[in-house]
Length: 435
Image 1: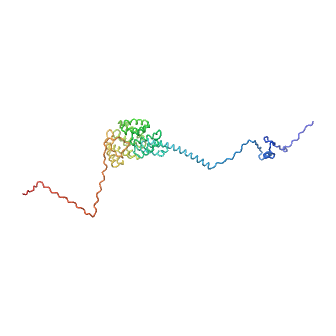
Image 2 (image 1 turned 120 degrees about the vertical axis):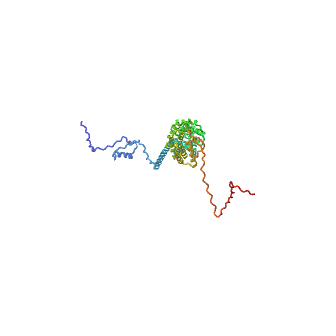
Image 3 (image 1 turned 90 degrees about the vertical axis):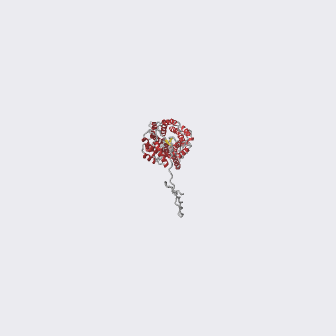
């Protein structure tokens, strides 16, 4: 049986191109017309296109996304402005709170010195914040102004402090500094009951204890002043105001010169760059009674008298005590120089000279002199006057001007000639008797 011969294979270049079969293509009988665009496309693709890739379409593709809309430039600018404004507002609020805390802290340090300069600085630093914080900041500013009214007779500060205390005293509870400010203002007006009520609202507070001690001293109850002052010194050992008042209390009530000197010295050391007036005056009184070397008191007194930030009446009072110590030492020229530099009017200058002489003659107990004129009054030197008042007459008025000469044209009137007196008979001469 003859073998069947396979036809000879065609050379590779003569092999006809077979139509590519797409297994995923839909059959023609499903309704796609032969001349449809999709079929023509597949035909063109299968016959070889530019890409040579097979396009597959499963019918599962998502709908084309709509084109993105561009954000208007104006909206972007507005958003940036709003963000920047919010950031600036937040930064400003945080900065003001930080500045407020810093101002309150500095003001508390300044009022602690218990000097005129310290109270003025505290009131000035809190002035811009009293409206922002009408409770704490306003109360502390009112306290500084109230102490200026109490110790340095600044009435305008007292009036402003009354206004600042309206809102703090309506708060519940009343803030600490507002209560202390009310006590200082009431004491400056001589209202001891109101001052004690306000100070007692802050129990255990060293500043309140200092004010209670001053109230007792003003009332003449020296023993009652010791207890709150001891408590104040224990609560804050370096509080100059409490230390100086405590020195006055033990000097006057206990006659304890050593304890008084220690209190005055610590008060001077804690008062900062300025001299504490009450402590300086207390050392002067110890020196005048022989319990302290005069040099220990002269230095603080002369520095206080030369301090331009100290009110004039405090400087004049310091010059008075320094002059008394100079007279005690026998230096009359120095005493005169100190009193001349105090800037006193003639009447006050005459009183200060006589008062310095009386102080220099003080014995073992200090006695204040009565009759001080206004330029020499000091709330920091509140020992009750015990010596007799010195009546200093005002300077004699200037002589009256001479009368103007008579107008020309009028003849001067002749004065009546005085009658001659009869000559007295000479002694030893006997008149003849006529008969």
